[in-house]
Image (tube, rainbow, N blue to C red; front, side):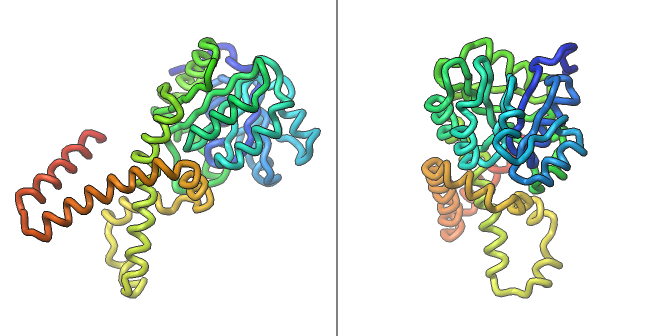
Length: 295
């Protein structure tokens, strides 16, 4: 989809200039969704690189006046830090936001951040949770790429009493950067994300650690591990601190997803132990067919 002739937002401020914040900045600029892009990050080097890479037009100074300048007259504010950090940022910036502004985020869990938006944002400021279902095992502004958002599902979780026009405008912006918006409530988002995203990462890490702790020589394992193992565990290379943040803000749903996984694993192992060939083949076939639907 071609970008709008006139920017949808005159000014935006991206708080957190890592992989997703940088990717959003590049996509918003290259598709003419935003007129002026300001960025802020606690890492001064990340801000410098974000300007160099064209992710933002201006970077704020690392002090309160600088942040105030970045937020001044911003119509769109994007929280692009891990969820627990974004919660602290939201509390800090809420008094600085102008009436009519829209605050969104790109975090992987939604219930806590959306409830905080409802509690902290002043009257006239709208909060809509956002989660682009894309990413990379790489991290940081150096890995930012607008292509990460192309054809990606972009989940939106509006806060209570979100004005329909604000939601429609954000959906238009998301389509303009090539992503596909979907709307659901925060609780449902977190349940789905636990199954689709958070559980796979947990399993991938556990597979790698199982190999690491198997007692075999590391060089031997590295030599023999083929593409199947590498493809299955690629996501285990994600930033550990970011993934702890995700797990810790969605513990209940992740626990439910893990219990469902263990139930399926025990079912397969139980039938294998009993020599139930047809049942094992049936389980494997069901998995094969379901996976083919994602292709």
